[in-house]
Amino acid sequence: MSDAILPLRRAIHAHLAADAGLTALIGAGRLHDEPPRALAGLYVVHGEVTAEDWSTGSDRGCEQKLSLVVWAGDSASSRKALEAAAHIVASLEGAALAPEGHRLVNLGWLSSKLARDPKTHLPTVTLTFRAVTEAL
Image (cartoon, rainbow, N blue to C red):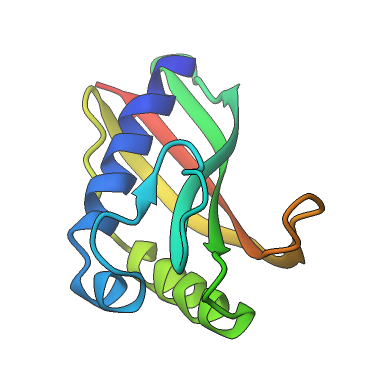
C-alpha cells in the first residue's frame, strides 16, 4: 500500500509548515521535498521512506519508516540543527494528522542521528519515525 506515502508526507509537511515554533527556529518556507542548492541557515528535507504491508484480514494498512533531515547550511550550527530536530519530534508526537484517504493509527519517533554530509561537510540531523496508516 505504497499509496499512503505521499498523503502522509503531505500531512506532515502541512503540520510542520503551520508550526509557529518551528518557523521561529528555522524561518518560513524552509521545508523542502528536495534539498535546495546553496541555502544558508537551517532547513528541513523529506528523506528516505520504506513502506511495508500492514494489512489485516479485514483492513488494508501500511507501515512506514520515514525520515526528515535537518540541514545546517553555511551559517547554522549543529546545535541549532539539534534544537530544530527536537522541536520537530515534539511537534509530531501526538499530532492529529489526517493523510488524505488514510487514517493515521500511530506515528512515533525512532531515532536521531547527527552527522556531517560527506560532500559538503555541513551538519545534518536525520530523524527517523515509524508510522502506521489504514486505508479509508
